[in-house]
Length: 385
Image (cartoon, rainbow, N blue to C red):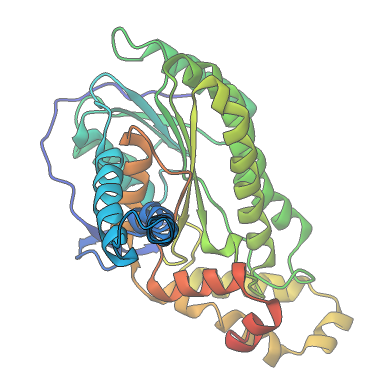
């Protein structure tokens, strides 16, 4: 376990970024935000619907009793203005980041490093966890552009020893007067590609070890520190938790498991005044889960070679290649980090954060709504695999 010493602070504004990424590194360049603030829309939607229902009910009662002839539309406008104003005030309340410490896992991914830089600029003490810290150019660059508050940790979520050592080192290096950790942010994701029959079991196990079991165990270890501050646990997931997606069945399963874990953990920790949020990120900005073309081809080649002759004859090389190539849009399109970073920052800084944030594209948001609320046959007709 290693902990980087503090360096002299270098001031730097966090750019809004997009990515070109591989497992060997990433390039971050500026871009403008592209997506709607869905969290605010989600927070206002139900109150506005309730305002409409209340306006119709009260208007009907007043007219029936001949007390007033006020229309339901006027009451709806009045109730909506009052409710939206109160909701916006409620939504905008924030905590002070000064003296608060956060732990971010999976900082090999460009998204996690941008988040670490963003929180450091806001004034948090950031512990950035890397699987391999020694001779890591990304870690060195992150430290170089951050303040002395940001500290680098070697943290592999599949290693019990490293997680326990991280807990001890975080306790030792907490800001003065701070009793514990304010937030644990799970950004460590790993993807297993291919239809279920094709994926080697060790690859499947690794996906669950990192995405589900590692996050669960690290949460167990850090919860005593988080309870002391009535802090937060934040999980990074993706829209695949709600969308059936062939060739990514293992990833869909791990994302759904994360959502189920977060939902139960939220209820368990509510009496302890510890918040839990989950960020259902766009498929184009979910940590280091998406591979570049070269990595994807290498994994596909290795997976094909491990198939039995009967499996190769059943599926055929053309079908196999077509299935793998269906993932190319998620490797080639440039991710929109802005929406995901904003949602993750809000979940840490808001006094009353939402449980689920959905920084998705409009297409993904609509697709998710159809998958969750309409009959499955209709979804299959509209979105053929």
